Structures are given as C-alpha cells and as structure tokens.
Image (cartoon, rainbow over all chains, first blue to last red; front, side, top):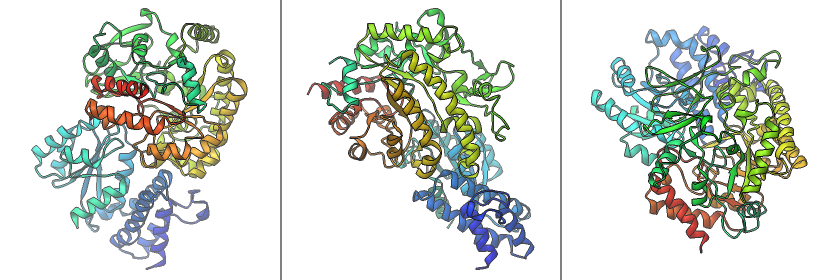
Length: 222
Length: 415
C-alpha cells in the first residue's frame, strides 16, 4: 500500500485532524488527515480509493479498539473529527457520484429525548464506515423519519434513547414508520436498551456500540 | 440500633442489625415525581403533596410518613428548607397529576407542549423539557466555542447552567441572608428530632462541570488536546468548591454524617476516559476535596458516578472516596459479585440493590423480590452496603414494585 494512504489511515486512526492539531503529541507539527487527503487527491489517488483504502479501514480499527476497551470516547471523537476533515475534501465526489457509498443511514434520538452524545458518535462512525448519514437530531418524531425516508427510499433507520421513559416511544415509532415504508430496517441503541428489548419492539438489531451498528449495517448490504 | 448507628456501622464495615435503606436522601437515590405520585395514590395517601424539590430531574421529596413506613434510615438536610405551603406553587405532571414546584421555578409552556426556561433577559434559552419528557436538559453551554481568556465571569456563567440555576434545596436558598446560620439551625433541629443519618448533597463536580461549561463532546476531546486548559478550568472550579466546603464544614460538618459529591465518570460500556487521564487531571483534585472534608469535619465522603467505573475505583478510593453510588450493576465490569469481592473491603456501596432498568420498571413484584434478596445476599455481608435502587426510581416504575422492593428488604432483614 502507498505510503501516503498509510499515513492518512494513521492520522484517522490516532485522531490527527490537521497540522495545527496538538493531538497526538507524537505527531505534533506533522500534516494531519486534512492536509494528507488534499495531497492524495492532488497526487491522483481516486476519491473512492482514499475512502476504501484509508478512511474506512482506519475507522474500522478505531471502532474495534473502542469495543475492546483499548481506547475511550475522547480518542474516538478525535478520530471521527480527523475523518470529517478528510471527508470535506471528498464531498464534491459524493455529490457528482464519483464515490459510491454503501447506503443511506437515517439517525436520530427518539421523541421526548434530547440526549445525543451516543447518537452523534454513532453517526460519525457510520459515516466513516462509508455510509451516507442523515442526522435528524434529537426529539425526533416518526413523521420526521417518514419524511426522510420519502426522500431516501430504502434507507436504514437508527434510533437512540437514553431514558427508560423515552425508549418506550420506539415501538410505536417503528410501527408508524413501517406503515408508510414497509420493510424499513431499524437498528436501536442507547444506554438502557438491550438486544431482548430490541427484539420485543420489532427492531431488526440492537447496537451496543458504534462498531456493533457498523458490523450489522455492513452485513445487510453485503 | 438507631437508623444513624446502622448507617454508620455499615460505612465502618461492621455488620449492622439490619441492612440500612435509602430512598430520597440524594438526587441519585430518589424517586421521580410521577413514580412518587403513583406510589402515594397506591398507598391510599394521595392527600400527600407531590413536591418536586429537584426540578431538573423532576424528583419528589418523600414525605416523612413514607420514609418511616419503608424504614428509610437517612435524610437529606435539604428537606428542612421550603417547608411552608407558600414555598410551592402548583403544576401538572406529564401524566396529568397535580404536583408542586418551588415558587422560584416557572418554566414556560410552549405551543408544542415542551417547557422552556429562559435567562433573566427572557431570551437566552437555558433549559428545556420536550413534550412528554420527564427531565430538563441543558440548552446553554457557556464555553462551547472555547475557553475564556480569564475566569472573571465564571460565577455568572456557572449560574446560567441549569444544574446551578435550578438547584435543589438547600442550595436554592444559598443566596439568602443568613443562609449558613439557618442551615446549621435547621440541621441541629433535624438531629434533635430524628435518629436518622443525615446527608448533605454538595456536588463539587469537576469532570461534569467541564462538560456543563464546554459541552460533553468538546470537553472529552479537550482532555487530550488541551490538558493545560482543562487543568486551568479545573483549578478555578476546585477553588470555588473548596470555598463552599469550608462553609459547609463550618456550618454542619460536626452534625451531618455524609457529604455527597457528584461526578459521572462512566458510561455503560466503560469509563469516559482512560484511567491515566483520570489519574492526571481529576484524582489529585478529588483528593483535595476529600482531604479537606476529612480534616475539617466528621463527614464521610460519598460520590455519585454513573456507569462502568470499576477501573477508576482504585484511584477514587485512594483519593479518599468512601462511598459509591449508584452502583450501576448493569454496566460492563460492574457485576455485584465482582464489585463486592474486589472493593467490598475498601468502600461502601450505596445502591445496586435492584435494577431500575429491566427489573424494577418491567418485572413482576415477585421478580423484584427475587432480585432484591439476591443482591442483599451478595452485597450486605460484612457491612459496606446501604440498600438503594440503581439510581432514581423513574416514572415507569409501578408502585406495586416499589412496595415489593421494600417488603423484600424487610424479609431479608427479618431473617
């Protein structure tokens, strides 16, 4: 693999956003994901290759390390930021269709709930895994999911809740979404949830952490 | 044994005559207004007012008759404030029941059914509760765009954060003239009129204040990217917390048994930060708080931290924390057997008595009983355990399960 692509992957894996970014201290003063993505495009690497060979594998390593307890949320956030700084250079190629993504993932925090740390992190990680992510924000009604699905037919939905009192909103929301968009696949997550609850309310999957979501999403498009 | 002796024996790791019990002595071992309203109705005591003393989390202060009925052994000294009907005004809970807010709390109902709280200018949104929700969330983060050059305005900005602006008693009276004298007077009166252990809830949050000021995502990244700025803001917070502790110790340090700090350091899957970061930035400051309390009062140190924190517990214990709450047993590496075996000799667990997610809210009374008996068996041996739910009893907990929970404690204690 090319050195530049390797270096870009390392920047994303270790959360080196750009040259000015002080973290990680071992990479101080060195170019970050921002500069290296630009450099890779200028050197003629295809945007698809940058995504597939550098960014996605790096984010995959980050997700797995988090699942294994080797890194913590701060590191994961910085990796997601580094990934975002790379993605901004790839945006035009998403728009003109030069890069194909795995699918569309519509994510939000359920109605009545304003907690979004986990949801935001999941959205960033899923984007880094090669999906187009539509983030509907917090306190999201079934109607908003339905509108988003009208615009992105066949998209997969992700729902998050932090409270036991709001997780109960998930079941009627899933039912309402599927009434308008039958067969819509839904993954749920959040601190008080578990796989058993997800099964009971008719969700297709439960995501314990971002990498869990990604593994499931990848499995349904494989 | 009196209630107080029982609690103190448990903290001293001497097995008390029965396992001490809490409900309502802290805003993380309490009961939500809706669950409380359902409970008093179930008990045929709907004459009791539902007073929401913690408006952010919408928690009710249990009436003394409820405390006595369930054999609760500890009281929050905050309950000695706002004791007159004129201290409260009527509101309606999300389930339609009548309840009361402190007179100073007046959220504004929006056309979409949510409630908003604004700053004194009437414009800046400080907190909101969406329609159907049972909790106010922070809307204003003073330093979301970056750290200030100096901290001259910190007190004012802290006062705009919902946890400070809409704080529970006794702190809602902290600006009253003669507050500290009143606090001492009230606490002395409580000590003379009850044999229960006494608690003062005194946040002194460090990590959490960082997240309140900067917002969670920013502050988490700051821990790695800007540790110097983090240390600087933590020193500012520590200075303020120590000044508060000085007054607390002077006013009630010889009367109150336990002082409760708060700092959520964990999530379900693990701590927010790696133990080295905790050790570098937070442990020395937690130690200063604990050291101050220990050298200036008789109070025992208690920390509330949600989530999986077992990997941080050796450092927290080393920093001087004696009591842990809420003991989130459904989090990773927080199994009750493991915690008791690993740390049971070195600290007291205040919580973990029954799962509030799963068993207490969705289980049958018999399932509640089984889990409570099982937890008591594991956790109470050799003292070091105060029975309490994992965090607050939320609105979805049926009253029959609350009664079953206390009955099971009674059954265990009667053995």
